[in-house]
Amino acid sequence: MEITKDNIADWLKKLQYSICQSLEAEDGLAKFKEENWIREEGGGGRSCVIEQGNVIEKGGVMFSAVSGQTPDFLFKEKEHSISAINSIKETTFFATGVSIVIHPKNPFVPIIHMNIRYFEMSNGTKWLGGGIDLTPHYIFDEDARFFHKQLKAVCDKHHPDYYPKFKKWADDYFYITHRKETRGIGGIFFDRLHENECLNFEKNFAFWQDVGETFAPIYVTFMNKYKNKKFNDENKQWQLLRRGRYVEFNLVYDKGTKFGLETNGRIESILMSLPASASWVYDFKPKQHSEEQNTLDKLKKGFNWI
Amino acid sequence: MEITKDNIADWLKKLQYSICQSLEAEDGLAKFKEENWIREEGGGGRSCVIEQGNVIEKGGVMFSAVSGQTPDFLFKEKEHSISAINSIKETTFFATGVSIVIHPKNPFVPIIHMNIRYFEMSNGTKWLGGGIDLTPHYIFDEDARFFHKQLKAVCDKHHPDYYPKFKKWADDYFYITHRKETRGIGGIFFDRLHENECLNFEKNFAFWQDVGETFAPIYVTFMNKYKNKKFNDENKQWQLLRRGRYVEFNLVYDKGTKFGLETNGRIESILMSLPASASWVYDFKPKQHSEEQNTLDKLKKGFNWI
Image 1 (cartoon, one colour):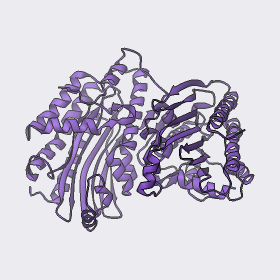
Image 2: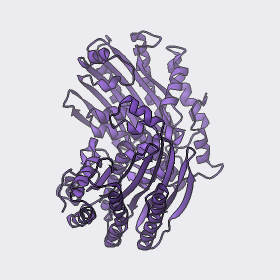
Image 3: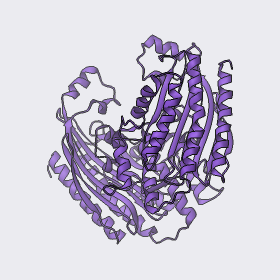
Image 4: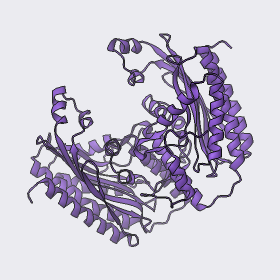
């Protein structure tokens, strides 16, 4: 396909539906509800939300394609001269993407997040971003290895530097500074591909598509593996506490969430990432040598899971 | 008493205990657990936490007195010349305060928050700040009136401008911009008293002490009034959703929380404000003409509750 913004948005919409179908099939009970919304300032989106399923307690597969005047805070994190910022101010932008967060019922099924996005400005600047990361309530080494191997395979197909680079990026990004914990076992994260990456835009686009397509098979594997595993109240309580950390990350650090809140985005779509329920217990400490403590010990940057 | 930083800290510690006693007496079941902590960079605090009481599900009455090199981000929100910022950089600071958040079990008992704080720098700058605000899960006009009347009485005793000014400040501060909702029915909020307020420091200090002392009688009134009121699952579910909003406010907007997270504060004390449990439901809408809808309709700035 020719890589135009309309084609990219169309491809993302198809990906959204195909992911919803895979998740529904494995869930076996709940169905995604679809909602189309329009953004006053330009563009809109299609939210697909699933709740109270057999496996998924709350999940969203959200597509959006928005446009308008480029907000200058987008460029705050990069150093720009005043004249560069002024020239950006006069441009319009277009951004499209698919964002997914799935919170499962069973504490042994991990939380997963995927996002792929495309951004362009009327001055010709354009880039790709995205990533997949996993937040198990309980970390099992074999699952962590499987997950990272899948991501490495997708990366290696396109460029040998991508997995190590984007794995580190995920470790650094999905970090809850105030807890000194990673959000989960990371995965891959990348942004502004094309501006400064090894491959040309077309080749990076192929990589980016592969990332999107690898989501469903990976997560369906975990759903299937753990959906019928027995769990007790202690497991459930631990899941709620880990979800609390997820809430902390998303509200305090997540750039997508901040961008949404600051650009008058559609709140229900942005905060879809929050779990159906979460807990906070004052100064909770897991028992020594417990599975919970084992998980905490592994929430560190720079783990080589493979 | 002579107003020195040590005397202020001592007074706050006594206030902390006296508040804990009042709350325990009305709760009738749980007791506060005390924990003393030390901050590496200077100072420390005493956390008093109560959990799983008869009336209080989770609550904290936290004292702290910390000191060190003045962090320059403290002054970002005010316009300062570079030379002024440089001169601040060379100062040390001392900050002490009592912070309270109480999350009750019964959805008809409101959530309450109180904070009073004192700040000084080695260059002689000093100020007082604080406030009390109420977040009912269900707003009852007569309670809102009672609450605001109590606060107005405390303010009016000291200066006629204080209630209108600090009431508006609370409306503006406790606002969840992305939800276009106030957090609750507000109350009073003030900061940097003395620098720019009507009364001299000694007189403002007396006002500030009165604010601290008015907390317990107000909240005990609400605990007593509603602790035995029957509630159903729908009421409980609504409480969890309102708590979700409370989490959103505290993690996204609250300056005290941000200050704590950015200055390597004691995380468990800072995030004590979060409830034991909270919920998020996608695009939840209360039934028309319900008590829940009535509450939502009143979460607006500028309501005259009296």
